[in-house]
Length: 516
Image (cartoon, rainbow, N blue to C red; front, side, top):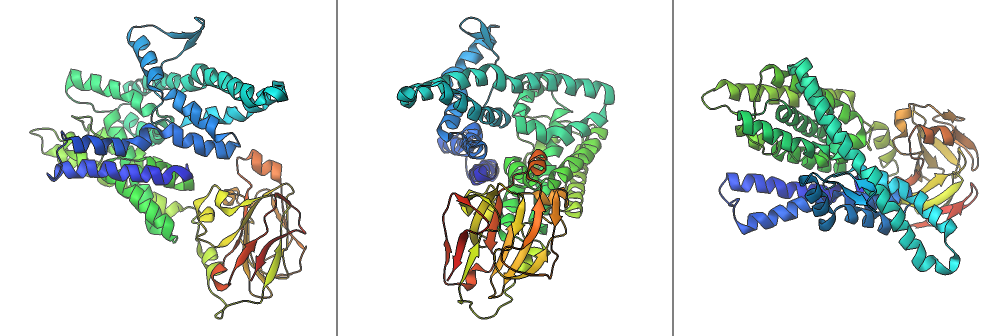
């Protein structure tokens, strides 16, 4: 999700304006300007599968244009109207009058396109094998799309719709059995419902209840608590982080979630990315939902749950309803913030990182140094790393290697300045003052040292080629972690130039960086 966060944040902030401007009388919600801004603010969300398709193609090593084409197919107006018309008529669309295509709405969704692009490379490989070389230019693309599109329409995509039906049935069954406790439980799991795009399945249910009783006291309350919890968790990350980029992105996503109820930037860009804040958001949502359910809060509208839409939770002639919503909001935000702040997260700039980033040398270094690769594997540019902390260059210049051998060796003569207790990252200093960070994998700190075997310790003197660390590639991959390893010169600003020696495959003896 990281590469698409700027687009999501931009759209979210436009939607915040659309909430605030009409409230203060600057913009009418019936004007053409409002409609145009609505399109601008909703574009990135409606076409989310297109953005995710491009990003997922990079992650799964699939053709990005096939991936985007899949997203465009399931969002095509004719496809949408065909399924919708058949559904309203009580009919089913079928391939060749045999294979049913389940009705589903894929706009705003995330999971279906990720699953589709994950399958895509296998389809490409299969088609490549069965296609004669002389026909590959035109036959292969046609066959790839003919294979993948029906699979997505018939199998992968409808899984979300099926899940949605099961979800709504299960949710109201839980409410019947558990009462106010159900509100807390749904608030806790609601972020994962948003990830599937199935939160839209609740809209007709909420509308039906509102039309019948005049209010809805279950899903709307859980959704409010879940939204506020996402914002509060992102706010905790923004305040606790020591990385300026993280502070800025987490802060803006917290604002959009709390003020306007646009949670995608907070959910995908902050809480899910750092994992532990997601735990805080779920627990905070649970506690707020329990309080809101206990007070039997009611919602009298269908506007996006947020601070600015609090009036829709106020019952006419019942001043206590305002007190209930304030207490529920307070419990949700405060508990989420405290839990997230206390359990913490892997801040891209922690104390150990700061120690490595300090300018320990007060004069510019220009003695020069050739740095050999500390790993064997495939070299990629730092900008291709699927983590903005590394890819943005905020920590310094360098390269990244996807290792094929689970061994880290010394890339120069020097010392081990920092050896993280989880063994996933090492800070080295050369004899000439070059500071180098080797970060094995992404988010591998969560393994807490499992599958890593250190051969040296912090403070040791090292010579080029000395084995510093070994790690089990297969077990780390099986645990679900990406092994791309950023190799960064953290005091890059002290040198005139850093030259990257571009190669596809490197061994532990190949030069990868040159310091001038």
